[in-house]
Amino acid sequence: MLSRTRIVALAALALIMLGASSLSPPPAPLSGALGHGPAIVIVHGLGSGVAHWLPTVRLLARRHRVVLIDLPGHGGSAMPRPFSLERAAAGLDLALAREAPGPVVLVGHSLGGLVAAAEACDHPSRVRALVLIETALRPQVDGGERAAALASMQTDYWGFVHEAYRDFGRDRAQGEALYREVAALDPAMVKSWIRLSFSADLSTRMARLECPLLVVLASRSWPRGEPWASAAAALGYAGARRVHALRFEGCGHFVMLDRPADLARAIERFADEPVSAPLALASATR
Image 1 (cartoon, one colour):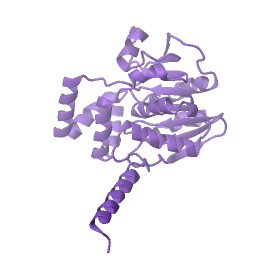
Image 2 (tube, one colour):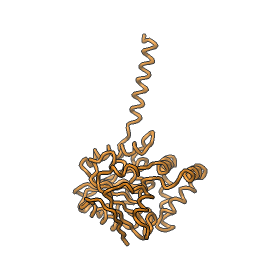
Image 3 (cartoon, rainbow, N blue to C red):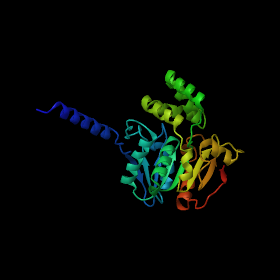
Image 4 (cartoon, rainbow, N blue to C red):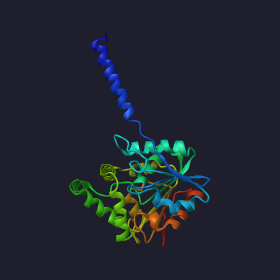
């Protein structure tokens, strides 16, 4: 018969092993791949998906292999438990190792861009150029606003999400369509990502980013007339060294829906000739 001490020791070992197993992040599954050539990997944002990217991807796939990876909690991608930005990035890293092991051009939209930026900082050898579309690298609300927003999300989740996605749209009709898509998702998953957006801050890590960076923003996030230095400070890009910023007019938060051809052209140009020297300039696209 096993002694009590040995039983306790075995139980403790089992708990340790169980804990280690539960902390293994699930790999973000491949959503699909099109084309042949140097790899461009795309991570969509919260409430988005592969369908939103197809018009842009078809253009990119003429000269590149385009890999689309689901954001955790979307499509076939499980949410890591416990959930954190670090564990979401670890899942993306496993997917990159499996699907595109060489250095890639990594593209992220919105919160997908936050995961892509974390991956580029943590595993610089995997990313030769980074494209972030409508991504804020620091919270856009302060402590008081954050508490009020979280309280609103808890008491009126549907109203909170409806208002947010209606604002994301190019117009009211698109905003309503975007809301219907996110409303079909698991509210617990959506809440986890929204809480992350209120707390995650990668701005202090931008000075350590090694690869060239293209920042694509709609005019809703970077109004015409605002200096890039001001927008960069507000969105968390002030410390980035090899950065090129591009403003797209006439579109909402989901740039790939409104300007797919222009977005594909910008990504492809950057993929072929990424910024090789520090830049402090901003370009505007009509």
